[in-house]
Image 1: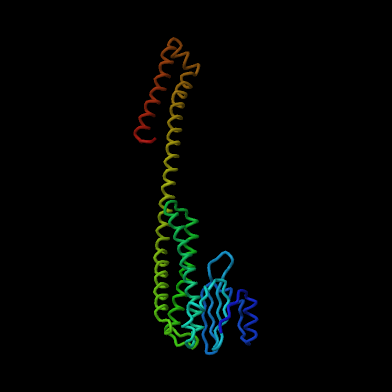
Image 2 (image 1 turned 120 degrees about the vertical axis):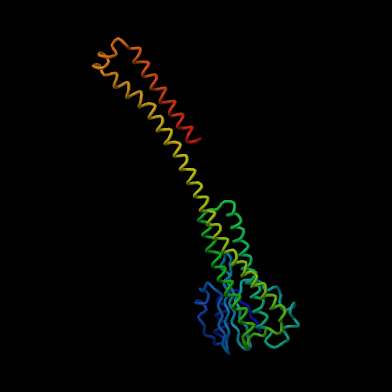
Length: 279
């Protein structure tokens, strides 16, 4: 008999009525798919990506299947009516359907992460890249645990699960799970590429900033030379003792000297600016 509970409290009451003692709350805190098989009881737990904290938890005994799932199983009784007549079909079917649902949920999460990475290709922001990298690593860990569980279910002789009654569907599920796992792993290298691209962009922006600062400092240096040279000449020649002794009768020569030194500073500063090829 299969019983699916929408709430944890309903599942706990059903387990208590069958005298099954397991710490359900501790299982719900796990971040990776979990499985534990024994002769009398098998337990499977799957965290699912959603805004309302969905998860799947299955307890399988020799006669009953108790499941807490916030996802719809889409009237499996009608679709697999002929299959349910076979031995161990109920536990096998409910496990298969939830595995399929979890894999779909993980693949949808991968698509979201990939879409974010596509956006980062155009505008690589290091903080967002790191967030996507952490999300991808957590998803890859979940996917690896899921693939491992699928392999164990197929290869191990578990009394509550019989792959042979739906061998083709299970092989398709296993192949699909391996496919999504490889895609997750391949995109981890893409995260490294995005980091490199972000660093290159940061270096480019830094170089542009340094270039602007160089232009500003060069301009200020030239201006200071243009101002200081004639100012210094004027200050020296403007000393009364010197001006009276040497330029008292040559005021025009003093003015011409100041004009020439100013023009010379401007010309040399312009030539230096052009030699640096700054804009």
